[in-house]
Length: 301
Image 1: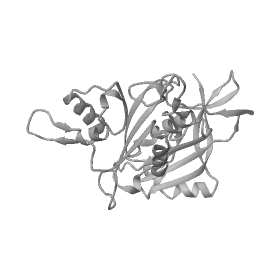
Image 2: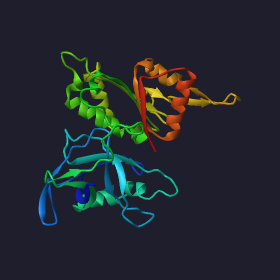
Image 3: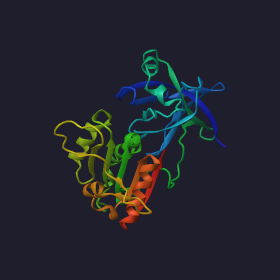
Image 4: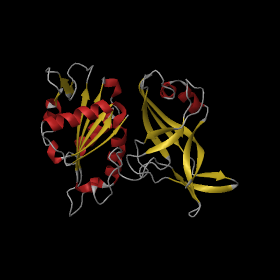
């Protein structure tokens, strides 16, 4: 078993999308770290779509807690700079999520304070490696397929709130790789449907608009506002799928708004990140319409 070590990471960037609700944080690890009198280099080989382990403070328990955070950038683009987007869950037993939204985070940044991030000791290679929650593709994670596979695929990425995080990592990695286009491969195609409650919660909106403008053959972006939108909002308003009760034994799911955005769902590999309710509604709606995507994986909370 790998031996774990927690390394103090500095807070090098903060972007608050909506105060008290959604915030982006970058935790940067040093190039080297001393363990038991030996200096090790820190290597960052995290897969796009995976998560790192940090120890934030729990406001309710008054203790530091171990928590996983999906990375929104990629190791190829920003080695050792672990970017993530966190929200306040507003659950009664929420502990660390409100702490991330508090003034404690800017204070840590201003005071050059740190937040611990786990690395593993690789004794054979004589290095520390940033820990990630999984390196294997599973039905319940969103780790990107291998480089020889994903360039041949067409993805429908469905994100709900901060569920956009793994898809940002995917897209940034794909961009560094030229979206996998070559003489023998058309390159990847990604359609991102990103739903949030209001325009303040749009995450990396301008970056995604520009990406869709510059590589339309590889990327399409559909931002969706479900509760509040400005006058003249040119994109989708309202939910992309809804439950329609008809008094029968099974609720009917209306997928018309989603299918209007992505009519070729059967030709897509669906990837979803959001709450379990959204996953269950989508799978039920697809079954009711007898629609079978090429594959389906979901990461839910």
